[in-house]
Image 1 (tube, helix red, strand yellow):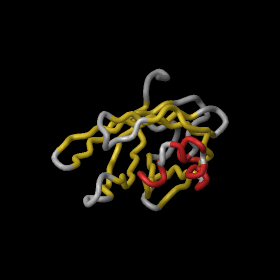
Image 2 (tube, one colour; image 1 turned 90 degrees about the vertical axis):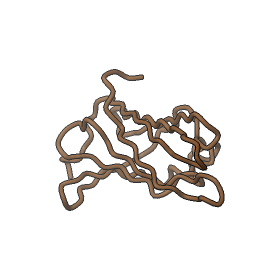
Image 3 (cartoon, helix red, strand yellow; image 1 turned 180 degrees about the vertical axis):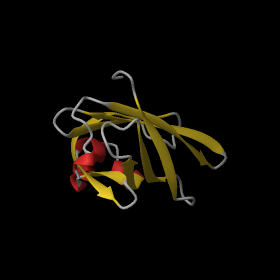
Image 4 (cartoon, helix red, strand yellow; image 1 turned 135 degrees about the vertical axis):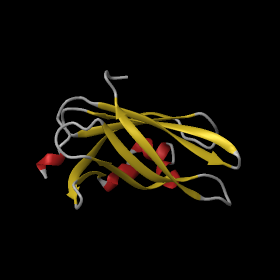
Amino acid sequence: GSECNIEAEAAQFQGTATLKVLGLTNHETIALKFNETSHLYYQGKGDTSHTITFDWCGPLLYHTSMARGNTCYLVLDDIWKDSPCAVKHHLPSKMRRLRMEYPPAGLPQSIKMTADIYTVWPMGWKKTTWLLEKQERAL
């Protein structure tokens, strides 16, 4: 419902997840940028070969929905997987089961994002969580 609308101001969120792969610690930083037209842009920065680095991708369309338990979900339209940027960086084969949730009412201070990230064979997929915090100014 409307309580889940992310206010139409250009807001930016960013957070870093730690991913342990074969004894190595990897960091993946994800940034989300909303603009006034309900479009979402995203960027990734990784510090090792097990992580993904890509510049701003978008615009992506999304919608929001309210779940039981008073949680808002941000849902990307499935066509994000076909966007040139996602295809170029092989994102659909590296990231799946993407979920973003936040509390209702106004602009959230943070968005919790979870996804399964493909690491290396034979470890395979690893569930990863980011806390994307609202940035005071656009990066």
